[in-house]
Length: 332
Image (tube, helix red, strand yellow):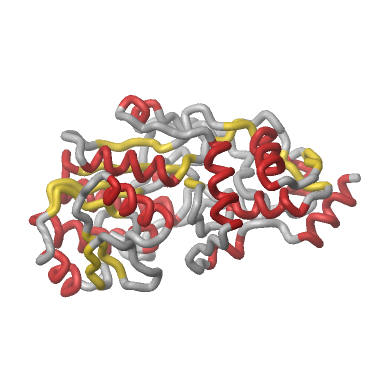
């Protein structure tokens, strides 16, 4: 489901590499993947889904495109395809947890409650940004998958996914900023460990679970991660930039109106953001390459004229040069 953007494309390419027969279902707005059968359609259309079902059966469905759809649309897809699919691998998010992003998380942490047939109005965002309406909606999507597939459902709950093809703009911002050089705002503490995962590693694990004999939920986060200081140093080294990080305390950045998570991607002060336990996934075979490799490969993709699909989230990420200069001047 999806199959031409970022994670979806990585899943399709890895499945083809493994010799699988792959059917891709999407609206046809972002290209094709050579070697896969393509069925065009809208996942919110019952008729289109019924037509898709005629191309089955399948050993598994990997759904990478549910993020923009309410639970009732997820339910429509899983209910229509259940007769022709043995398993369903559903890409969800750590935002489904009640404690996100304040508390450390395991798969046993409480999940937000949302009906599997809820529409796009269900849920709310708390005054401090937690919980989020997005989290409620994704929890409802999980509920729809579990209702239809039960023990044959696999729920993947990633935090941040980076790598070649990224359309959100988090890592591309830091790479571009490092290449530009000069004094650059860096969010303290420098030793904070971040846990983003490589898109190709998520794709590989999704396919492993598609072929597994049991289901369940898995947190997807880098088991060792990288400190923010090492992250920025790697971005500078790989791009050849001569930038100098200027470490600033969260209180100082907030006082100058710097937005967490967007203007300085990957920076968020909540204690649980980078305290996601992936041990269950690691025990099930999740292997994460060093983040330095992810950074290097993303820079190589960008230098080779890598062009992500157009997405509004790209424009949300990264502090503008004029604002950054003003903040640096104020920080002294």
